[in-house]
Length: 145
Image 1 (cartoon, rainbow, N blue to C red):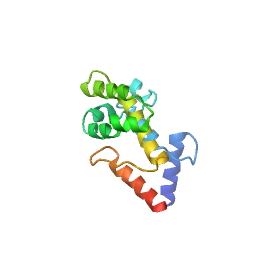
Image 2: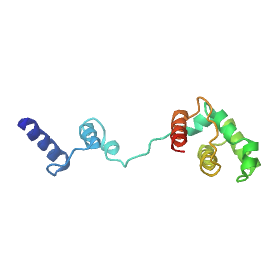
Image 3: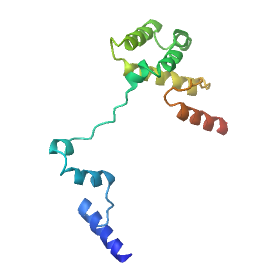
Image 4: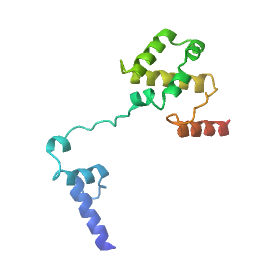
């Protein structure tokens, strides 16, 4: 047991240059990678994790987007220009433009407004992104009311 604590102290001291500070997982992965990867890879700034929302909105989430941003839903909400939203969706689906980020923002505004202003969550279609998470949130919300 004492030997293990000594090894742990030595490891944490080596990792951070300060005794007793826990070694981070990032550092634990970075140190050995220095021998395998070039410095421009190991020493570069952190990068975000890309999410393929543009592909999802053209593929498996297309019906989800169309349901929530249908002309009738947009008209009923009264926040956005129906023709403009339809143009964005059509261009995106055809692949003539990548409006994934704009569509993501529109979907989020619609879902947020529905949940917090209307207080009537719209049904989530099966197979749409976030289905499980959305149901969990709605379930928790129903239990607290």
